[in-house]
Image (cartoon, rainbow, N blue to C red; front, side):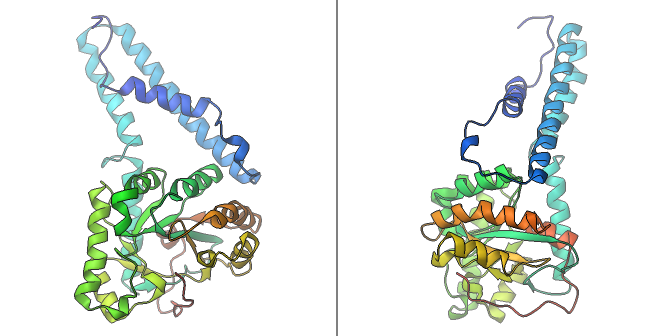
Length: 328
């Protein structure tokens, strides 16, 4: 090693170069993107500028430290580098960890007043896009659309698919999305005993945490069907049942135009929108999703995760509407 160069943590330089390349080079898939609103463009530019500034600042510090020579200078440089890595990573000091704490506090607050939700409070023009029955081979394509549009979603995952498609769930979390529980095998829960229901929920939760993800705090019963045993099983895991008030009906593959219209004709402030990233062919969903996002933006809606919706626009105590729709 060159004695005149400060030793930085292993992998630090390559991580910074990766970050710099990611924000400075154009995306070679840009030709597949649909036109997005100016709001989305500005959001992406701000994020790119922030990431570029962070990478540039780190490179400057690295260069200054390298000129300083001597091992006596390495400790401050190492400490600074460690902080940079921690903020952008998944550890206790990362931004992701801080967001997770806020999300969990919002869920805990709602659980005080109701064991399930259908929508937010309706006080803000925010909605939540949710995706069921993954992870699957379609999940990365859904994630690419959300990333390109600057939107996050909530993914209700089937435990039985995680052994095959688990890396897609990790990618979803790393991109700022929320991973939630949708049972192991997608049964009609009211037909099962409480022990069987607990197994469906617990096995999936364990499979998610085995990926290195946080234990899910949100649960969606397949078909929106649940009973008192379901509520008891979810309560034991400190999970909030999340239903929906807007069903895209994409699970029935009615055509792209119909999926788009099903969402935009029903949406209102606080809506939780049901879509799917698995459970069958999802080409129609993939074609409809960019149009849905653009239509929601045109109507003035922001799109957030379910926990963020709960934090910004929680359902009012005693006003949670009854569950609607059959879903899938």
